[in-house]
Image: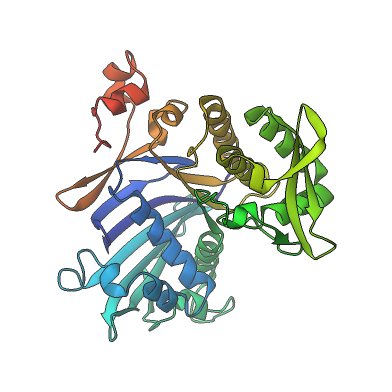
Length: 379
């Protein structure tokens, strides 16, 4: 199985630090690099907003409220910017599906849908539409209001709407930074909380337990890779908490298989590594996976394993990660790299091209060129 539906291009304007981004091309594997505050997180945050309003009829209002109102999302606030606009191109084996959306400011420092439109072009170019305006949906996306058999739209438009919703609703976002003693990743999780791995891996025990029961092959592969990263781990089991409906990750050392520990006694790096391996090795991956700084706390050998996992996962899922790790960057091709810089208050994106940097790449590694600030992405 290979990825056959991907978000292949995006334009975005007026969102947070992104004043205007024109036609950024995306591939199966996308590595965002840049200094703190450059705008990598803002880029991913826009996708989170899309997912919010396509999975929940009140999702736009909820997202805006969580992020400090419309002024917190508009480029330099509502006094400078009054519109957020975007255009997404989703490529499938049958052709291209385009979705454009424009948000305006509403009363109470909120946003509303000014307009949404879709268009399509078949792979053979025989079927093509002009942009079809879906109109304003107020606080709710028109994509959620159009039914599968809506007679006012042709079958191509309905298929385009379905494709857009399916892909963007299936986006998943992950950050495993919090491994403090109180973090959910170290605690117990309800045995039935296992449909998908949560963004902070707070249900890691129950998700692993489900894999062990329904797909032991994947479960054993996860454990094998985890032991490569942390050889001191002898075995990992999922134990119940005093006959309650909650389960907890337990493990023992390879040198003493008789003395059990729980997740609270595992190192930060090992725990993050197990979460990453579980995410990227599960049998059914989300359509699009976004991970913030997956390399955090991993030793060099583990980073090499992480790179292999990301490459393998990109064969069946579209991967978008942000990183500040020079070591991780060296495992990828220039075409995988998107350099993010903040210049005079505006986030700018530059997708690397091998030919442009060929003289440098023939002599130096990607990380060496990056550290020398040849193509940007440095403080």
